[in-house]
Image (cartoon, rainbow, N blue to C red; front, side, top):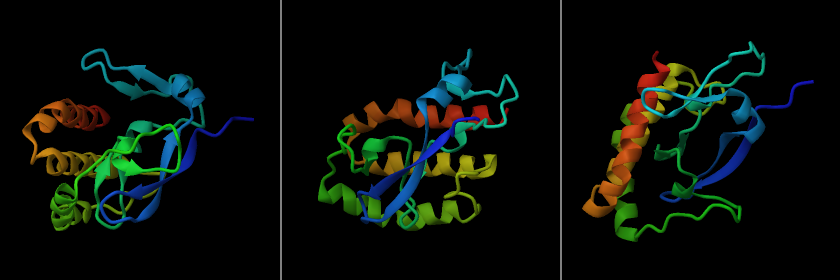
Length: 166
């Protein structure tokens, strides 16, 4: 009997308080499927042994608030009920700035139907990465030092989006 690959995690949006479910990959499944891309040194998921439980977690790693469409692969960008993840401290000014950008994120998200499914396809994942880039740029855009720190993550979203298209 195969062990499950994914488990559901509860998240809460820091910007509008919406509770939602995201998915994480069990460490044992990560060990079975995760490999390192030789060109970009980013995690990629491959089904090298034709395992019927395979999950390309790259498609699911971006969590998206279903109300304001804020998106990120970092658990710290969402409030969680666990003692292992430190929630990012965000000023009210920045929260309001992110809230005002909701319509732009909503427009990006309109082109796919599977954003909130654990069966997210490549098209949905590409939209999720686009939302994550937009969300990070909005969140850190007002602070040039923080934006400089976040820039590699934004670039990483682009690399992963490119990788899943291969």
